[in-house]
Image (cartoon, each protein chain N blue to C red):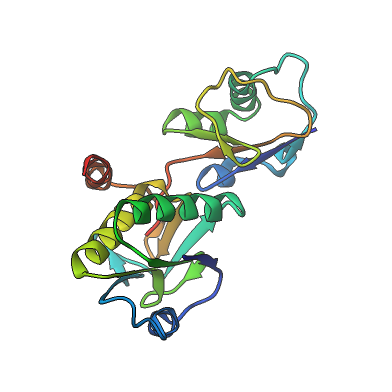
Length: 151
Length: 84
């Protein structure tokens, strides 16, 4: 399992290529890449800033990743989460799961993303011509998290 | 001394003077500390009141605000989190 918080822009395709190199023991790879949008809720976004709590954020994201991977057949999992100042078009998060068959890999990625939305110790601030605002989980994010917990 | 860490939107209203404090004599528990911070900095107190605030002590999640704090502790104040 490889879980990292990175300060600089990263290349999701290169990360996935390194993660899957030589893996002939698995039959499925599912990956999700979340990117910074140039507009959110009708407002132009110039920059997204993500703060973290060094040490604690890494530990908690690793705990969430281990929790989710234990529930499924998931021999390996990759999580790369960006922090700092992020420009539109740049990757924010990459989650990639390997599994014998596709269903486990899909479930791991979906559930971990639901967890990260509400439980990862990260704080997002969006800024643009209209000002700046902190982003908090939406009601639907909490609802998805609850569903994931039940499932 | 106790180190205080304010994250996310709390970091914008917390003065640098709160980063390291001598524990006041009447502050024994986490709840005492949270109330003391709110009295010192009403803006920060209002921000914490307006949202769900979690406390982390020495990088461990705390579920009970009656827990005692000790000299040398690091206490972090976390507003709602959002990754992904």
